[in-house]
Amino acid sequence: MSEGVQIPSAFTPRVFSGIQPSGGLTLGNYLGAIKRFVDMQAEEFETIYCMVDLHAITTWQDPADLRHNTRELCAGFIASGIDPEQSILFNQSQVPEHAQLGWVFNCVARMGWMKRMTQFKDKAGKNAENASLGLFGYPALMAADILVYHATHVPVGEDQKQHLELTRDIATKFNHDFGVDFFPITEPVIEGAATRVMSLRDGSKKMSKSDPSDASRINMTDTADDIAKKIRKAKTDPEPLPSDLDGLAERPEARNLVNIYAALSDQTAEAAMAEVSGKQFGAFKPMLAELAVEKLSPISTEMARLMDDQAEIDRILARGAERAREITAPILAKTYDIVGMVQS
Ligand code: TYM
Image (tube, rainbow, N blue to C red; front, side):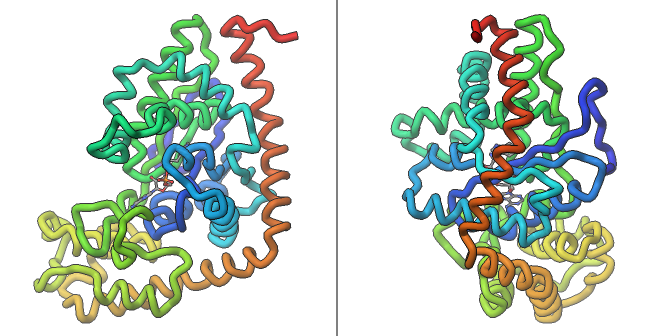
């Protein structure tokens, strides 16, 4: 059990998390999410991981790219250590109960709550009038993803914190409105040294698959040469690394590289700092590049191998969806019953 994780009493411990197939996987997704998913699979939880294609289409996706990215994301999960027998691994659109519960939650969530979502503001940008209605409603569907499994724990990166608070608000309001104790109040699990991996070009921006600059991120499909080159060129400052983490407070780019080093080497940021303190970037960057290549290259090689057999990936997704529906169908049926929908 992860440190500090509390289990809401009446519910079986169950982990759910999702990733959008809206582009390639980045090192941010890997360290902030997938690596944590693998750790939780090894603990005593039931683990359910989803490629959230319904969320992806809240912004424009080319259909061929969406298909490719969904399969590649599935390959990325497996290559990183998710076992599709032990965990349930599937894409969201094959489990219709997500969208069905999402509709009920559209009627529970309040406009005022949704308007406060910073991710909507970031993604809609200056032209919010032209954003899709789906993008605005995105967090209600995300709450449905989680609660349609009665999931108790959700491992995510820092940027999803507000969405998980909204999930708790929706569960609380539903339970209160209908006088039931039906949906659990989910615990976010935001842990590890790299809950917010930053751009390699700008330490104030999150590493993101949608950043126009490819040099800003490490993609999980990058070659060893690309990885080494991007780390070598990563923005830094002229000072050597300080003796402790406090010395990195005003040095976001340096702090980011130390965090990445810590997460890749399975250490706390404090332990990693002790190992690298006093080093110049000329010495630290090659160490980091070597570690990143050692950890990431086997994953990209395995992803490529898995992508050679797409029929097998599709079989895994279909089987995952079938197993998921064994959980979601009764929870949706009970929700409809609580709400008062006549079901014959
Ligand atoms: P998405 O697809 O943007 O990202 C997937 C996961 O990767 C984490 N992440 C990061 N972590 C650290 N540093 C970064 N730079 C970084 N970039 C991304 C995200 O925090 C996330 O955990 N809304 C979600 C998908 C979703 C979901 C869900 C998650 C839909 N339904 C239900 C959990 C439960 C999203 O857009 O993730």
